[in-house]
Amino acid sequence: MIKMHIGFDDTDSPKRGCTTYIAALLVEKLSSIGVSFTDYPNLVRLNPNVPWKTRGNGALCLRIRCRDNLVDKIIENVIDAIEENAELGYDRTDPGVVFLFNEVPQEIKDFAKRTVQGVVEMKEALKLIKRFKAEAVGFKKGRGIIGGLAAIGEDLNRDHTYEIIAYRTPKNRGTPRKIQASSVKEMNEKTSPLAFNNIDPETSRILITPRGPDPILYGIRGENPEVVRLAHEMIRREEPVERWMIFRTNHGTDAHLRKVSSVGEIQPYNPVVVQGVVAKEPKVIQGGHVIFSIRDETGEVDCAAYEPTGTLCEISKNLSVGDLIEAFGGVRPSSSKHSTTVNLEKMRILKLVPKATFFNPACPECGRRMKSMGTGKGFRCKKCGFRSSQLGKVAVKGKRELKRGLYITSPRSQRHLTKPLCRYGREKSRAPKRMIRDWHFP
Image (cartoon, rainbow, N blue to C red; front, top):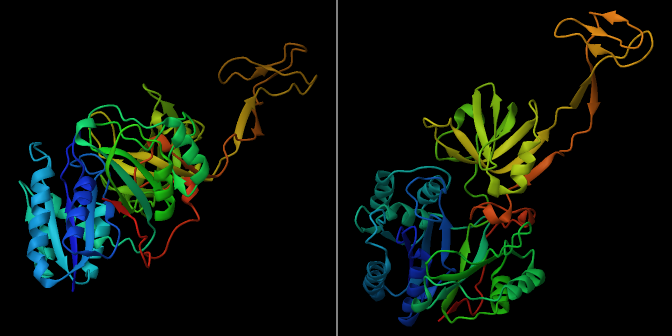
């Protein structure tokens, strides 16, 4: 028996297909020829800010044990499944698959981390594949080889979550999804917070169902395989489910975010965590989006809280110049219309400057509030006539509405990788020792 890691990526298009669906097909096929799975299929979300992604930028890895004489048949089945199900007609779909044997080298694990947190090049992936005697197959430009190798390298031995995905029958794809909303609410009440991001609390919008014509009926995320399986069983479906499967994933872990030491270190397309002082008052622009800037001794960068982020957008409106914050988000490069911008996913308020309200001075003769005589001309008391060019406005410190702490975009606009508040304190430090019995169908 040998260990085999099968990583693949970039099989879908913005509107159709799904790489997880190909993984589900392969699990059924490989199970039927005697392959043993050593882990749940790994669904690894890569850097969500790269411009060439399709939808969620998710790569897949299947980790198996098999007999030596099955290797060629396994490779043939994987290639056939990608050829038959990838959206090869879309010009930016460039699938790739990587086969690695035995243990995963540290260099490939390091590559995976860079792929989740930054931007890597094909030549780096090909160099590692050659060095460690892996096998790779690319379709068209083969960009999916990068994600396939990264999925192999991300062993999820640190924090991870689970997602159960149910798939639609072919005839129903492209039609409205049919599940009972009341059952989702009941499921959420009984499984939350171990199952999370099922419903948006601000709008009551159901979040487990995608909106496009892809094959997914719904996906439920949670802290362990048992809770997502239980949640799946609570959903009342009004259309048939072709198949379902549990994935182990980096969803909801903040795996993409990398802390940088200064504003000057920020690079386009990278997800970052950066600290700075608010340099410009927040400004609400068309669409209800909020823009402000932060600075440190190395430079200044804009931050954007978009209207769909809900709570985060509202909090951003109340920042003041001088507040110290930590900004979490993806870096949008500068263009002719805007400067380099951190698109906020989270914000931690570290320090708030006192709020000051300025009043005209009281008259030293009679105590009544004085009136300004114009810029630089001083003040005059209307009651007793006292005048003075020496007096100035009086600052009165007030209480800020904001509080220090962490603020996160509302669930309806959270990215796959964004860690929700309910997950803080639930982080894991190792992979599971065993798998539950029924983790896929068929």
